[in-house]
Image (cartoon, rainbow, N blue to C red; front, side, top):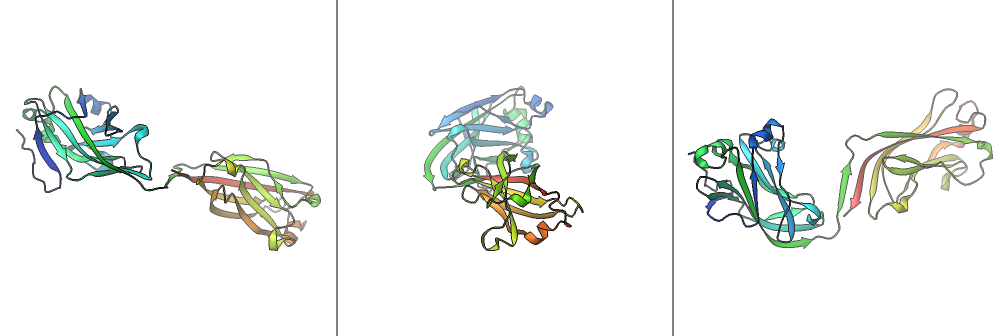
Length: 312
């Protein structure tokens, strides 16, 4: 028999129990096939304890994401709609079991203190639940006929709410979207501002805005050019969108385009960003510069959404 480590130098309590786990038992058959089919982990179905739903996650060859070698890994995970949001916390004491099928009792691991489950930490458990040597040794009874039996007990001690929170989701492979706006009869633009047609970038609706005679204290001397959310009121309260964007007026003669580039957070209360002093009206209207040709200018926007924050 491979000896089992019962010291508590790592802070983990190891015991032998004759009683089966109170809340859940998981029987895993044909464990060797998990490896054969490149299944690094197995997730159990949901079970209820303490008013919440949980599941077991089992790594028969160790959790590679945590560089575990020569051990099996076993975790308790909060599951389903009962999982707390970022602003809430659930404290629980739990024990994880593996059955000695030779003797009918259980090897049990337990951390000596309660653990805090919340929206950013839904799992706790043991990277090194049991060494492969101990797990596969037939005399220990943990793996018999390519089958093992696992279990869990969960006791919720308290719940707390910390108020408001938020969740930031960054886009792994963001896509840049380009939109072109042809503005005719530039010399006849007499309104304070003009909007482009709405376009989609990063699942959000956007538009370009131009103030042909300028805006604010720079009115009469500079053209103002902005990127704006087309429907800011449709955003959930507290939501923000992090976008990289370039606004450009194309030089139709010399290919010397005039542009501005920035990274900004957009929201329902901060839905417009750009430049009040984008370009002087003198330069813009100079026929030799090519920004206005045959009384037409071509404006462009390139937008890449890198992240979205949602209030929870």
